[in-house]
Image (cartoon, rainbow, N blue to C red):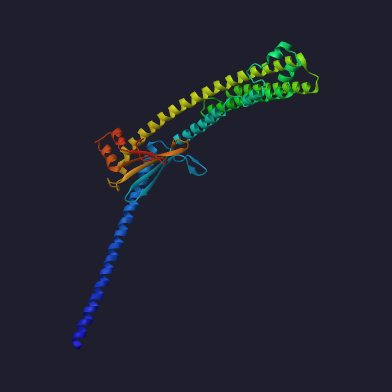
Length: 362
């Protein structure tokens, strides 16, 4: 009986010992795998940093160009384990895109403001003279003569004079505001130099002075008509002269503003065309850099992906600035490096999209 118990004890002891050894071995294997995985990640991160530095130099991105301690140009690398590499590209094209976007917003605001007669409907309902229109008179008034009290009261009372002045003022002010916006947009696009802008600004100031003088004349006519010191033929003559002066100012201001808005729209179109050309050239250079330097990514497998996030070079339908992404399999880039396909063939395999759209070819 004692012999059986000893054998049972030693069997139990050996089982415990074997289990402990197994746990130790599993722990050693797990630790070894973790160390190996950590080494692989370190190598991949090192390769990614080297690749991003070389690519940045090949794209002539100034890594030292900073604002408030943040680099506005360069390439940043993020390694994604078993997924691949994400490269964030900060380029001068983003600043250019933002400049174009600001100019476009100014143009849209200017267009939406419109140049029109805000009091036209009110004036028509109340039979007041409208800027650019001949005064409406009744047949009876004409028969009584142009200086009849009925006609003067109907067409040249204080309220009519004031409404006419306000109407013209709003039209001219809107035109001058559009002109100023167009000038600012062209300055953003470097169309106007600092020496050219003052001449046009001076003209706008002169037009504002003319408007102010005309408004004062209308105010004087209204005041004297209200006090009874100006009436009859004199009232008609002075009011018509003031309207003629305002009409001339309105026509010139509208023409002046429209001419500047057309110049601004053309400058924006030309700037956008140049920017699109620069973006295409940059993307060709970017793909060429991938093909040339992919050999630095020693520790990456063919099944992994390379994604380039080019900051601020796209915009959505609402005009908001977006980033543009290019995603390729490393296997395709290595085929280019090996000469199996050219840069264009490699780039055609890329998936391009923005951070506000579905995956698609750009």
